[in-house]
Image 1: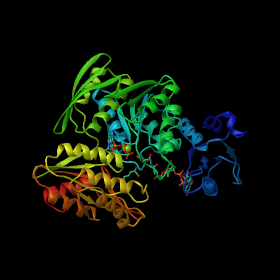
Image 2: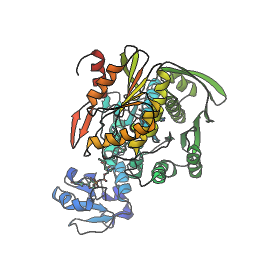
Image 3: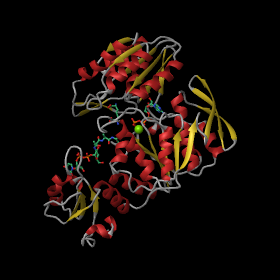
Image 4: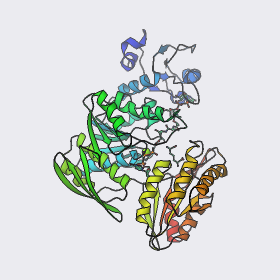
Amino acid sequence: MKLSQLLGEAATAGLGDLDIAGVTADSREVRTGYAFFAVPGHAGDGLGYAADARARGASVVVAPRAAEVSLPLVVVPDVRASLAHAAARFYPRQPRIVAAVTGTSGKSSVVDFLRQIWIALGREAASLGTIGLIDKSGAHYGALTTPGPVALHQTLDELCAGGVTHLAMEASSLGIDQRRLDGVRLCVGAFTNFSRDHLDHHRDLEEYFAAKMRLFDTLLQTGQTAVIDADSAVAERVAAVCAARGLALFDVGAKGRAIELLSVAPSALATRLTLRHAGETYDVDLPLAGGFQISNALVSAGMAIASGEAPGRVFAALASLRGAPGRLELIGQRDGAPVFVDYAHKPDALDKVLATARELAKGRLVVVFGAGGDRDKGKRPLMGEIAARAADIVVVTDDNPRSEEPAMIRAAIVAAARAAGSAQIHEIGDRRAAIETAISWLRDGDALIVAGKGHESGQIIGDQVLPFSDRAVVEAALRGKAE
Ligand SMILES: CC(=O)N[C@H]1[C@@H](OP(=O)(O)OP(=O)(O)OC[C@H]2O[C@@H](n3ccc(=O)[nH]c3=O)[C@H](O)[C@@H]2O)O[C@H](CO)[C@@H](O)[C@@H]1O[C@H](C)C(=O)N[C@@H](C)C(=O)N[C@H](CCC(=O)O)C(=O)O
Ligand SMILES: Nc1ncnc2c1ncn2[C@@H]1O[C@H](COP(=O)(O)OP(=O)(O)OP(=O)(O)O)[C@@H](O)[C@H]1O
Ligand SMILES: N[C@H](CCC[C@H](N)C(=O)O)C(=O)O
Ligand SMILES: [Mg+2]
């Protein structure tokens, strides 16, 4: 492909006729004839790797500023956006329907539910996000929630070639901000909710909010639909952003107008809902527990309807939804006490999941959790406080300490937990021992939530990833054996 086709004629300053064999922002992936996009990153500056790119055969560097690089160089105003658009042109095919969801919590659940609804309605559907790419061939785990633009466009092209017509994808705030989704031909966008997260990357909550809003004020086009959880505290602000862009608003929830949640009747691990949409009333038996799962299910139903599906069929499909892996997933029981694995690793998610579990526990509520190293330190005391207030027994353990001293992370949680509530607070660093001990304490009517790692398959200590699965450890402990 010619450079002019990748970047647009105006941008290429006389170099438009160069044949380009591939695009990348990582010099280590450069092959002969590639265009190397020099991205100023968090850890390094791509221009510093131009010599490496040249040595590996790059034929041109695309950069945000002029520099001495011994290769033809094209300067562009927004190099991450140029990379994303170039990747979209290099890998041109995309599923006909691409729906993206943003929000602090619920994204992985929503994309999983939307894929399940589409499949139930006979569509060739896939989902992409934190738990990987899930299509009919199975689950393929990826490192990022929203992949980098080159990997993303390659994936979209491959999915399309494989016959996938409908894709539900997570739009992380970092992904949106870093232009990973620029060039994706979106049809529908959705917003779940907003609370504290990623303050290790965004300067403050306003900046984090603005990053999410880019999905609505820039990436979606006038006339397209935005589905919003109307019960979110920021729903009105999001609606105003959507209105200013000329998006069609589809709001869902107790305060929703497009799908109005009229009543909720919880029963053990399921919930009966009555909904109103376009003047019709629907009864739905949602086979999931928890108010937050209702929100997620309604957002996914809204996205399915916005993508052209018949509402009656969409609501009928909700009756067979399965929870996303590691999201309030019931693994088994010990003496009448259910044990769940959940991915709450931020304050609001922990609050929501413990509130749900409290309703399921006739006896004591037990929680095992920790907090990630090299991540927002501010969330540690908040999570300690929430756990101590919501649970009866709190076991603070390790969750991906990365380069930090694990005991320091635990200490920050434990101190806040001890100051906050009347719960028993225990500290057991070894996560396997923490889970096994908590399970050994269970009595009839109790409930245990093992939070923070969900689907994850490793414990990151230093720069090593040791195989570890909460699910496997819980299963083994419930069988009464070491895993
Ligand atoms: C902090 C962050 O967001 N980093 C992401 C970002 O990297 P960066 O642009 O800052 O890169 P950098 O390391 O400073 O390097 C600068 C440039 O030099 C290049 N380079 C580097 C080394 C080399 O030898 N040669 C070379 O060319 C790099 O490819 C890069 O283009 O852009 C890269 C490409 O898109 C991402 O792979 C990378 O994700 C890292 C691995 C990461 O861990 N990101 C996490 C925090 C993340 O993005 N998480 C979100 C949210 C998760 C959620 O809430 O669900 C996600 O979407 O997953
Ligand atoms: N709508 C919601 N509101 C609040 N908490 C939620 C909601 N949905 C899920 N949660 C909680 O957040 C956890 C993560 O859910 P999920 O993976 O669906 O969200 P996510 O937005 O993809 O999160 P991440 O950004 O970590 O990938 C769940 O395990 C649950 O504890
Ligand atoms: N995408 C999130 C996931 C965190 C999961 C939790 N187990 C942790 O390691 O903090 C992050 O990397 O911050
Ligand atoms: Mg996710």
